[in-house]
Length: 325
Image (tube, rainbow, N blue to C red):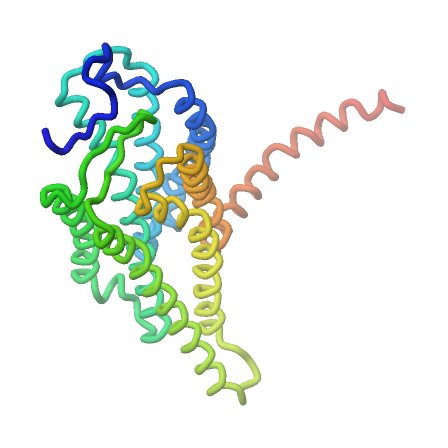
């Protein structure tokens, strides 16, 4: 097993121990609290999808896939937290140890790479909707299937290929956290380009093109006395995505950049991971808050609650009213 670089002396009693040491456990506890909150916010979001058919639309498929990757990241953390805190076997089998290490070292990067390309696909679909004024989710269904498959498969092939070519090697260093170590600076630059620079640059370009198209259209219609509902909707799409993408980028970017730079500072790693999980926690809130379809659902729920519970309160007040006099 040349892929595994052991950091502990082979004469130690617990060479393959999976338990985190106290410092690593302390650094991971804030992430546990944030993930518990994330479980709550995502559960509320998916309950809306379950009970309200108005938000079960093809045009929202990229949003739901994106939020599904959020859930997988949270599940990954809970699984690893349980393994690293409850498994007390001093000498687990090497196969099980390698599985846990690869799971820990690769899945986070893979899912985060999926997210950035899923958002790019969402942005491109909205750009087509704005500039061509057509529903790509109906007219280009086969192309969307190909896009889904490419987004899920190509990053996986890229990751596995680097491991097989020894561009990336598994490293279980002294912090008890498994990680990938890249063989050369050129590999790091390549990964940073593929996972960060390229998709972010394309997203910024697509946002610019969408905004430019809306601005150009508004200039051509400057003589008109009113702005069409379609133009208002297109503007709202660009603003929604720009707000969400800015918040997402500020919280997501440090973790993906740090992974490529391969820092061994546990505190810095924990802070970047914490920012990433905070972003995961607020994702459903931001998406639901910026989308009018969810706003209508919230309005209906609030109206239902308002019509149900205040009636009981008013009845109680009427009953105790005469005694107050």
